[in-house]
Image (cartoon, rainbow, N blue to C red; front, side):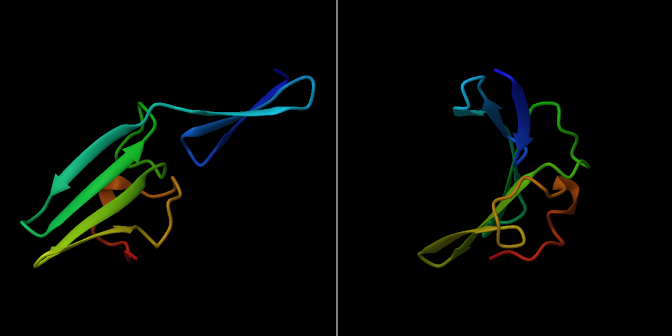
Amino acid sequence: MTDSTIINGSRKLFINSDGSINIKESPNITIIDKVSATIEYYGFASPNTSLSDPYWRIQRKEISGDITTFLFAEGNTNFDKVWDDRGVYTYS
């Protein structure tokens, strides 16, 4: 292994001496905030990430009748959100 770079907050890209590439997933921590019977927020981040750090993937679960929808903060799965700000993001 000659190089290691963090990508997307929870993945490590390893470039080996022969030029081959390996991707390793880091363990994620999960936090759940059930704000009502119809809205829940799920946060995913690497261990030791502060709730105020911009390294979270945030997902919102919405229940409407028989339909359950899972949406992502700002419409993407990037690990670049702040858990403490989960209520102000746009979800799609």
